[in-house]
Image 1 (cartoon, rainbow, N blue to C red):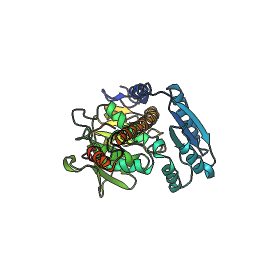
Image 2: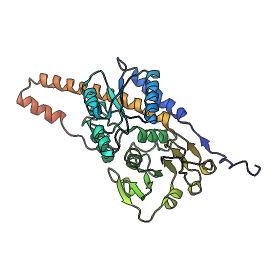
Image 3: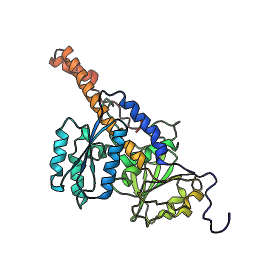
Image 4: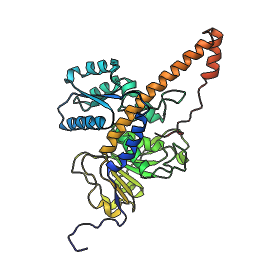
Length: 358
């Protein structure tokens, strides 16, 4: 190569686009749709003037309509968004609700809006119960393990990309399939970075979470013996200490000024960028084996998957209620019959948070 022609790509570096990854996930969603008797209906609520939010809303509508979902956009003033959400919660025409954040200038007000979205309609997985389940590594909403908990879209999109790339070891049982993997996440926001680090650690990885304040290590302990992740401050550590150890580097730093220092990459690392700007410079191809420059198309399919799952959860809940009513009727609703039903069907199953896929 002549001088000045730019860095040579790694001879085996493969650039994989989000659209390619999204196809398989979309096929899974469409297969689930065929089992329903109607189109799931998503309501989008837009209460800001952010051009990026408008683009995301338009993109959501396009993807929904192209793939068998109904979509309605409702624009609202900031001071009326609470009433709009509460009305949507009570409206049976809407199966799911997505709100385009940020709405207010402080995080606390946005969090309040997140928490008033009905659990049964929260396609973004941002309400308190879903966030609690995610950090506690609780994967179901019910003891019968029929209703899966909903996860935030962007962190789950990264998980699905790692599954597509076979970073997850399918020989190991669900919940332990990242055992032996070391992953760096450059972003510790409450919306994406920290949830992603927790999800990866709960699946068995050793995760280094990096932001401007320093480095934290997320693991399930030595030999992944613990049920959920724990967090340890790595005093004095910087990205220079952890990046060379990592099989996978995931970045999500906002703004075009930040560029990951590619000389720190482990040879053959997998690199994924979820920021709207490119966090990796062209030199990433000199050391990475796989590079995913953006994940947006996967994220939007994950949103549809979450909506489908919410509908499936509702059907599972109705089925469970119907079965309970049949049992109660068969036993004559007597006190003794109720006691027998409780003894036979109400036993709490042994906690097994690591036995199912996300």
